[in-house]
Length: 123
Image 1 (spheres, rainbow, N blue to C red):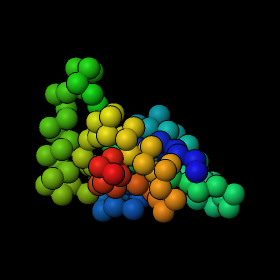
Image 2 (cartoon, one colour; image 1 turned 180 degrees about the horizontal axis):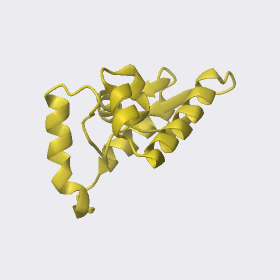
Image 3 (tube, one colour; image 1 turned 60 degrees about the horizontal axis):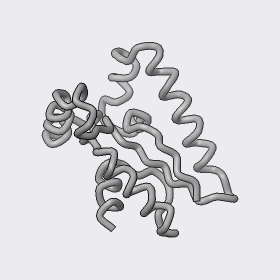
Image 4 (cartoon, rainbow, N blue to C red; image 1 turned 90 degrees about the vertical axis):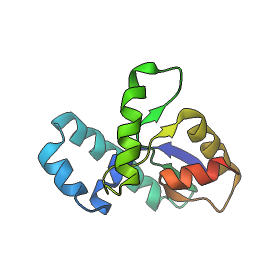
């Protein structure tokens, strides 16, 4: 298996209004970043010699990184309210547990969004 940590925003084309947000509001650096993430995702998705596990966390946080803590509730509330282009945040420990579970479980493959990451981390 090969695990690639992408980003939730790489999935914007797949959700309502995501393409508009990217086209109209994303700065140039973010567009380049997303293009690079999608290029890797695409290459991995067509590889036959490996089992790709592509995790797409939104904002990754921990209690030790206080500067991001104020924005966490905003992301989580927007996600809970159903804003399609905002995913729930993921704690770094949850992401790490999900990555290990994805490596260990041969049935895990492809894109894993925040809900998949949380489920994998509980295994």
